[in-house]
Image 1 (tube, one colour):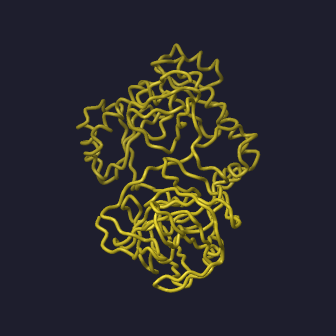
Image 2 (tube, one colour):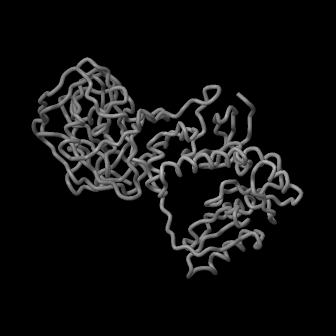
Image 3 (tube, one colour):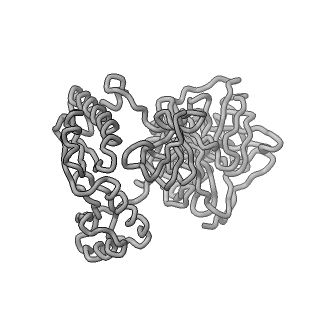
Length: 443
């Protein structure tokens, strides 16, 4: 994708949008959820369970306790059953885990640990091997086959197919050379699409002609600098995927905008720190003059400085902007619209300035609380979280939302794990992840 037009950047005061020859993909980062008992789980989670699962507070508590008991039983039984292990699941309304095995002699052992037993024909490794054979030919899968997965409840590999294209699905399975008896076809009209996170500081493109940086996630999209685009301008993310549309844009006089994102993008209360981690946004409490402040942007990444003045009027070639905050943190073209934080409190979005990150200079940002007030939007926060926890030996802890490639090393459950295959949401040490992670020992 070629970007055609550049906004001005001068040594004197200027706005900070820029152009580039291509859109660069940025690494994803997210915090894994904490494992907690139902007595210590965040009240917000219990409230969400009541809202989305139709539970009372007591039912949500009982559900969590049952789920945790089931997980403990599975972790205990899976290694004991060895090759006969064929999966485990919780049946709605039941108070205990169901564990499948291919060896009838293991039934009493399963029951002795408080689980229901089911004897089946295929063990988990056989089913997973069948799925991986299909994975190997995934690039040939017709669009009428939206996915496939191991279904331990039916002891099969389930292949989803559009009802009008069952023959194409069968041909795909035959081409993979798998055991047809292990495959079950299920009609489905789903059309999966990728979903992407909106993070402060990440790059976005405007009308295929300029680049700016996301400020902060708000309900329905994100806020950024007004000089980055006019109302109706379309945006794409750093990955080149259609992202949203400018619904509000004010410049000059002020310098702010709101971009409404489409259904493929999810606003997150984090800011990209450009070192593989993010900072969680905890609120928007305004910092005082003299406070330390850091900013994030697609061109120069994560830079820090000090707040030197507030409520300043700055004249650009396009006109005067009032109510600005002055800092000595550097920025360059393309950083426009990006995030400013004092600690984990959101401060504003990059507007413009003088100098660069080689020589230093003066940069102004437009205050976030003014933007929120004028747009009627609500800042999305992450409760002070956002940075991935550190695992053993200083390794990053495994995250269910991160993607891993062969050779990646993480910490998890007191062990060091080396990735042997490409994966997402495959937990190290889980029985179903034996082909994905190699245990490198305790740490």
